[in-house]
Length: 184
Image (cartoon, rainbow, N blue to C red):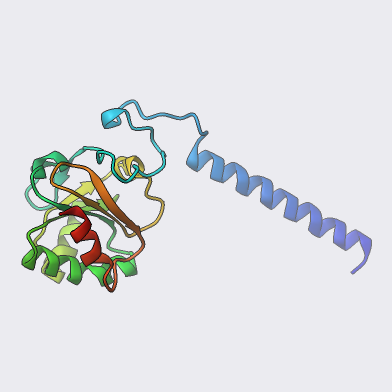
């Protein structure tokens, strides 16, 4: 490769990096962006809530019923809060385990779907026989409150609303049971 060809490749690579960087910056926003609508003063895009701290409350619409559902509705019970999407393969894989926990454990499973339409979500829930409450995070704000950047993500909250454990990625093996025990 001669010097002229190398210079062209270098120029193209630099342009791609700059354009890519601008795209990422535009999608993520600057670090001082805040969400004025965030409950409990949570900063949009903030780090996940700390273990031992109160889990951020939220209000969303429940798929199927259209009723408003909030995390605080379940105070007094341990909660498995799961962020998911129908297109997420690991999310699909863990759904039967979450349903089994909901059916057999004394625990609430509250699923928060990330930015999909109610018809898509409800079709999935019907197809897989999912009966635990599923809320629609149509704008992705609740995901931001919890610092979720990838799916699935699961938070284990005790009856007093305190975050006791969390898992970024699928809850396989003993992860689900260990999280439930931490939230009791």
